[in-house]
Every structure is written in C-alpha cells, then in structure tokens.
Length: 597
Image (cartoon, rainbow, N blue to C red; front, top):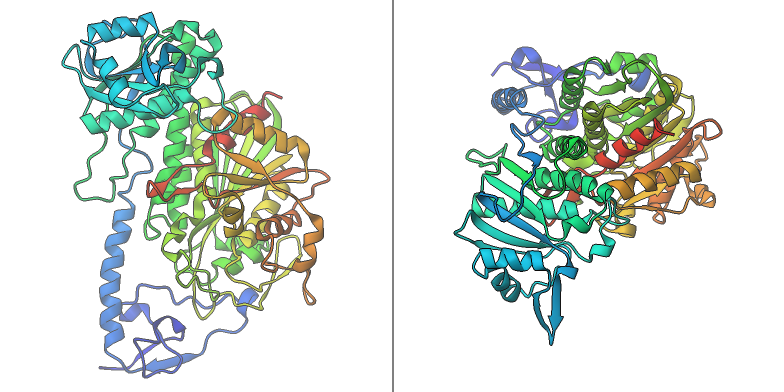
C-alpha cells in the first residue's frame, strides 16, 4: 500500500506499529477525525509530519467512518422528551362511580385500625368501597399486611367497574402537607405507585382517589393534585428509546377524583406536568450514551427549549473561537483534544413585559464524557462517565420547567461550558498551567479534576457577561461528596447563609434531598501551588470541600451570592439503572422564588 501522510498522535499507535509516534490518518485517506493544528495559544508549534506504511489503519478508519456516520445520523433522530405523556385531570365524581382500567385508593394510616396485630378498616368511606368491590380491599389489607405506611401498596384484579383495584399508603393524615421536609411528599409517591401499577397491569386509564380527602385543607388538596400529576408522569417513564422493540408505558390518562376540579386544581395539575417534563428532559440527556449526547447535542436541546417559547427565551452558542477571544483557557484546556468541538451554551429567560426584579444564573457542568484524561479512570466508573454532564442536564431541565411556568420578576441565565475530557497527543497534561478568563493561573496536577476548570470560566462568564446578582453552579463534581452523603443526597457549599436558606426552601418544595456542607477556608492550604496561583486538586482529604473552595476563587462573593451543589451521588440511581433528573426541580423552584422576593 502507498504511504499515507498524516499528523502524529498517540491515538492509533496500536494500529500503526511502523511509526514510533503513531499516526492520525488524513481526511483525504478516509479519516473521520479532524487533523486541525493545535492552537498556538495553547500548545505552541504544529505537530511534526510523519509517514506511515500500514494497510490496517486505513481499513480500520474507513470502517469507523461508516459506523460513526450512522451514529451521527442516529443523533439527529434522538428526541429530547418522550413522544407522549399521560394526561392528568382533576375531576369530579368519586371512586364508587368511576369506570376504567385501574383505580388506586390512597389510604392514610388513620383510616385503619390495628388490634392484636390485625389490621381492619376504620373509615366508613373505605368500608363502603370495600363492600362495593366484594371485600377486595379487606383481602388486600390482610394479604399484604397493609397498614397505610408511606410507599406501601397492593393491587389486584377487581372485575367491577374498575378492572384493577389497589390501595396505596399515605402515612398519617396529620403529616399530610403541601411540601415535605425530606424527600417526596406522599402524594407524589402515590402518583408514582399508580403509574407503576399501570405498567404492571397494562392499564391505559387510571384514577386516584384519597380516602378522607375531605379532611385535607384546601391548600393541601391543590398541592396534592400537582404532586400526584408529577408522580404519575415521572412514574410512567420507560427508558426504551435505545431499544429496538422498546414499549412505552400504556398509561394514557389519569383522573384525580376527590380533590377538587376548579381552576386552581387544573393549574396545579398543569404545573406538575411542567415540572415532570423538565425532569424528564434531564433524564433523557443524562442517560443518553456519549456518542449521542455530545456538546452539540446539549446545544440542540437548549435550542429546542428556546424554540418552544421564543417570546421569553434567547439562545447564544459560543464556539471555540468565541471562547478563545474571551480567554477561557481553563475551559479550552479541557476541551482541546476532543474530536467533538466544545459548545458554550448561554440560554436566557426574560419574563414577558421585561419586569425584572433580579438577574440570576444557573451554571451546569457539561462534561458529556470524562475519560479522566491522562489521569485515566482505569476501572473507576469510566463506563458511567456519560453522566458527568448531569449538572448541565439539570440546568436545561430547569429551563424546560420555566418554559411552562414562565415566572415573573426574574431573568435567568442558563449556562454550560459543554465539552469532553479525552486523551490525545495535544491534550491537557498533568503539570500544565492554564489561565482562566480572569487571569488566574491553575497548575493541573490532576487531569481528572477537569469539571472545576470548565466551571471556573463559566462562573466568570455568568458574572462578567451575563451580569448575574446570584448564581448557583451544579455539578457531578466529586466522588468525595458521594462518600460523605451517599447516593441520595446532594451537597450544598456556600459561604452565604441567605442563598443557602433559599436553596433549602426550594428543596423542601420539590422533595429533592440536599444537605449544607462545611465551607472550611483552612483547607485551601493544600490547593496552593508553588508555581501558579493554585492547583486544581488537593490532597486525599475533604475533596468535595476543596473543590468548592477552588470554585469560590472565581466568584466575587462580595458582590454576588453564590452556591455550589454537588450532585455526584443523586444524579444516577444504581438500583433503577438510570438517571434521576435530580436538580432540575430545585433549580427551577429557586429561580421562581427569586422573582417573588
């Protein structure tokens, strides 16, 4: 075979043994990847030319081009949201007269009585329903040892007006409230249990009825409708879009029977649907494989949001050259060697009428794949590193929620420095020094501590270009936070009590679990560098705290309220084997509250 000229990289050394440096094949020879010279502002001189005599690399690259072309074509066909959602409608009527596939009865502990370890029905309303269905509810209570505890449920074929009947525990009625201090409300769990049962029993229509619902306050009833809607839509979701014969949930319609059917109840149901849609967008993005969810794919998701509400959204995508003009050396240092080009996403929400009381920012880490760089993640969850853009996913999910809610009084800037952290001859090396857009220099002592580098320039952009007054960054940043708080709780880091309290209030409304962590300034000692302003990673201790301290160096905390949320744990649910959508709801709720203050 004739010799093929190319540019040297280590990426194909195992294919081109004739060249001690390896070779990246030229585009003329059928190469998929770009052979762009390294920018002189980052790596100096162009890579030397070489010649390789090898037939295998050409054949391999040609096949790769074909496979990659198919993957790229598939990218354009991948949706950002489910094709359909079950409708949730607050309706009049009651459980006794409802007819359909599946009837779910929400039961408080107070509706039952336990004597000698045997549970029986105490509520007259529940007793009448039991009689109508031939004692089936009593059988379910006995068979499942049902006591009305939150999260408990039991369903069976009914054979009456409803094909299937089930009971779902709501806990004590005295604790029923519009919000929950820790975790989802029992009403959201009720909606989720209904949707799960609908999958099991292939139910297209379903109804939710709460025994003793009349005892609830008007505020709680309205909130319950919204939470049931949220739980039902999220619970109906099935991750089937990458399966050849995947089947979505059969559930098409849910009626909420006895919690009111006026305009406020309808608005609550619509709001619940809006929060669900944003959460599902986050799930869709986070669960997508890295050959689908590239930086360009995130930009397309932002575009879809802007297109859905063009009267309140404006989108700006900064390309590599734009970021170079802004001297984003930390961000571009991470993105430098990836084939997929970086995309700096700036989506702005401005309320109708332009009445803005406060300008806030939401900044999400957008590493669509993190190999670790030269500090390679050898066996360290590398196959899961598609989820490292969970922060960007949460930010875009929050934007989707706001496209439905359209709150007044607040301008929100949704920002993500999206890129990949890959390995290549011109990639970031341990020992390199990068310069952020504010002139601060960072010694890279660990290429796997890359997320904070991208966030540094993104936070500076939020302050200097977007002019935000308050900003939250959210990221799957450290395994250390997961070690500290487990997989169900996010860590909140901030030196400011006001923004910490506002985030906590938002999380109480949404049920997403967050915990404020120490912000210990003395730990900064291990981040100091003898040759630069700072290092990007500290010692083995308190890694989540030192990461937050690093980010603080890029925020003017005298002028801007700032908080960092580490979602490395709750962004993914190992038990379910999928993304949770964590963060989207709390970010949206916080943003909404800023316009009300």
